[in-house]
Image (cartoon, rainbow, N blue to C red; front, side):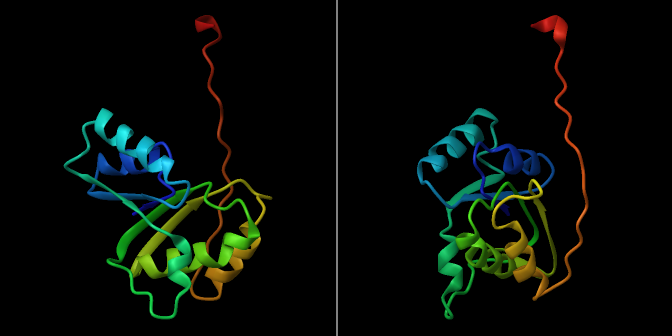
Length: 140
């Protein structure tokens, strides 16, 4: 499951090695972009698209349609007010023996709260990494 599918990078990459479901929360216009990326890359047979309202995961009666062995997401948290809904979504959709890989810039608003909420329900490992922007100066 790719949460916050955005432009399709995560779900598209995952679809190259496994069946994937890419979802986005808001705005719904991102679903159009994601559908276009899936089509451009010929992934319609292996990548499903869905809208998932994270706040629905907060309802006591919420049951996900499916749980996933792998949940991935990048730059999902922007506001502390969304941390509880995002944590509930991640926890509800990750299978008991599954794993969630989340990538986010340190210091992002809401990240500490998101990690605190997930940590209260399961193991959390953090790893720092650096992304390099590789620019071919001759191409400019």
